[in-house]
Image (tube, rainbow, N blue to C red; front, side, top):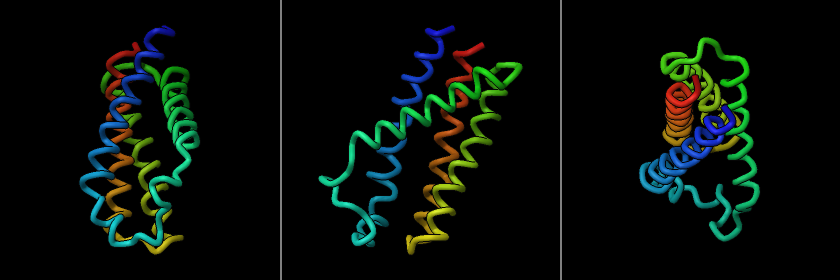
Length: 130
């Protein structure tokens, strides 16, 4: 079981990294460049904090699924991922839009990205943890 948890966590990290690269560096990049005063310069990003936040989110995602979701299956993994992804997407996209002058399209992009990350993680969990 520990091996499944670790493998799931690593695969989620890889999948989220790829999704983030596609979403932020390709699809949403024009929106970021239109509002440069809202963002830290790339060389001022706290890489350690980025990884702490990412690893914590993955650990919580995997822990909730492994401890509280039953029965464990691909379908329940997808449902769990979709629900948690929607919650994270709403919090990051719409929550930020409420408090910061980000473009509406960026808020929707973050909401969509959160949903996609959740569904992806749920699919991985539902496939590997039974």
